[in-house]
Length: 353
Image 1: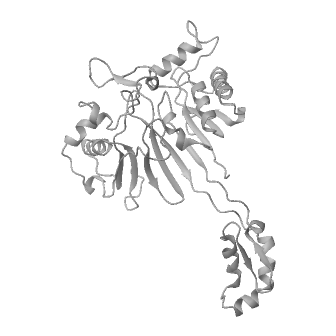
Image 2: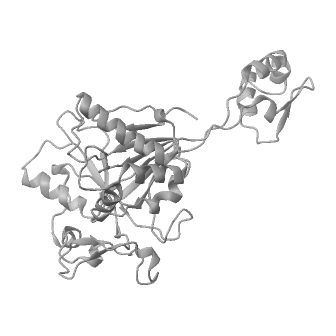
Image 3: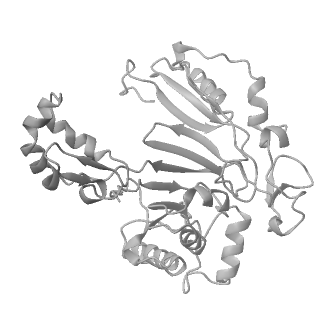
């Protein structure tokens, strides 16, 4: 949204919870900003609270962890269907529609922003929680599912479509070369394009060249390459709602706010730290590791650490972060080089499968 973005380029697409569109309109106009590139906002509607979170007796919009509600009455304790817009009348989400602030291209906002509603009948739904189909660009799809936290929060799954296998040119090209003249006589203006036809043969298919040579798909085309999948969980004490979408993730990014570190943490225990993290809507490295194991993630990236972990370049900080990584390694069953504690501006390549 900065001044260095081309104002004549395509609009910036922004995704977030309902109320974000009005909030941005308010911020841009309140700041009297006129140097705003074109943007549009796509809102995820009706983000529900997890059933284990409920308002206190004050009913003042604050939600508190109330234990593992999944073991209670399923009808009474279920994922909501309206989010805070239906449950908390004083929240921004509830009040934003009452603010009469129309979109204006003078302040950057352009047409095309979508309201994305949850699906409760998606085949990857888990525990009765919804899924949002956020984006579909053909070769890449983005989904979202709710997290268990004290305020509405979601996690995202970015999934790449699988690609067809590589054609083994070294096997097919010589056959095509010796059939060039016959292929031309058969009406093919560019005979070597037959390689593309063979590459797209269905599994079990075959092609017969004019000289009688039969090329079978399984002999000359490598198996399809499975698309990559990256899962990014938001603030959460429990990521179960996204587990159906997240299976087989190449990369799982999961928060690990607090950890019990023997010799550093005093007057507490591992169980107490885990309980304290959960009632505040957060996770430990063990929680993250267990979820990575549940979904069969190949790599785990820990983030969202408590501010008590400095994360600087000192030996003490490096030692602490290494211990946090090892706790996640033990829980996940992954190798040490497959678990890492993230740092600011970290770049992590996701290799092709």
